[in-house]
Length: 158
Length: 455
Figure (cartoon, rainbow over the protein chains, first blue to last red):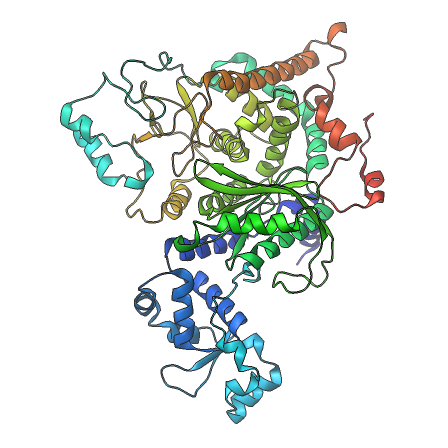
């Protein structure tokens, strides 16, 4: 990086016009999210957000329950079929994001799933190395049994 | 001709109100009975339109080039005004806090996502721009949302409240006190919104404003295309300040006739068409005033492609009939067209004459993706004249200012400052009084930021 580049970058960093800079990806994410909930148009980004929000609210759920909650929230009758067609199913979709979701090995078809960030590093290590079941880390089962539709509100995190 | 129209019909999505000329194709051209402005057949009382007035062209007017060349004299001053208007950090902080507070209140009563829709998203807003929020609801819950939100906001109305810990939206650091007041439930043609004031800033809560979100993203992308250190956003601050504080400063202000999206669309159309000529906000303002002062609401409409003439007395508008050097590439337009009209499959034909049926009124500003009207109501000719008068007055003032630079005379000695001639109210409000209602009350801020009136 030469001197001119550094001067240019320094100027850009302090330029008062940077006040206008916007990350358009955030607005687009919100559009896709609306399309999912309002127009029943499934997109990867919106599905990822909604799955995360469901699990943030419910902590731990079997994959099938996540799918059922998604159907309830979006009111898409054939969501399961759409997910199978687009991503090979919800389980396969979640497996594509190991940095976000942790899927237990306790069931071949309908395993429990949690958010990676819901686990401490210690818990994650115990699960990985000692095969401690994920549900052991969530002492209060009432949280996961809650039947209400989650309050999906924290869009800005994605 | 019939074959071409038939091709258009096959491509046109039904949901768009794109003109359906099937009847015309069957019966021959139907010129006798035209559709009136409200879409009803009105053959006996044709609208008071005359033959379309030619769309004003910059190249036709020698005065334009002369005055446009003088614009650069005021570049520095226009940048000063923009600097004065552009949002400050404490405005962002305040608006985020107030928006989050409202979102928390709404999600407490409605289990649904809530999105920010205001120009905070573009980081390009004026101090009194409303905070706009959209709830996202599935069809099953859309019928009652407004009552639930209205009731919730009414409960907290008039009380000093802050985040109290049981909301997911709460920011640990955000302990600011907000006061909601003047909560109202508004029904605009069966579309509900809840309005009110938080502290001193107006707010609006609407439902499923997906199309508005697309428009914000579209404006942001056009701003990126224009580049030059956010020239479009800087120009829009200047233009909107003129419209809201200067043109709309009198008691019988027409400012509510053209809402924010209409002004943004008009500004975007200027950049779309004249992007090669605009180097600073004052250029944008001058072309904006010049072009729209020559607009004839009786026979023309404002579109993203510029001013277009109606083909006849009907609401049919030829959206694309020539190939201009437009800034917005067809691919970008098509991307947003598809996302707005999400269930429309097939491509958008941008390379041929496309006749669209639009919401025609005395001052028609056409939504680029739905062809609906961007004006708040169907403006009558009388109201349209008021709007037009604002443009004509301001372009006359600007012309006097420019002429005074070329031929100084004793009578025009006072015509030196763009601020004093075109932006006196802005100068008074934001410059001298540091009128920023969207900040937390910090007494020292006013003193620090007060503007030098004698510059």
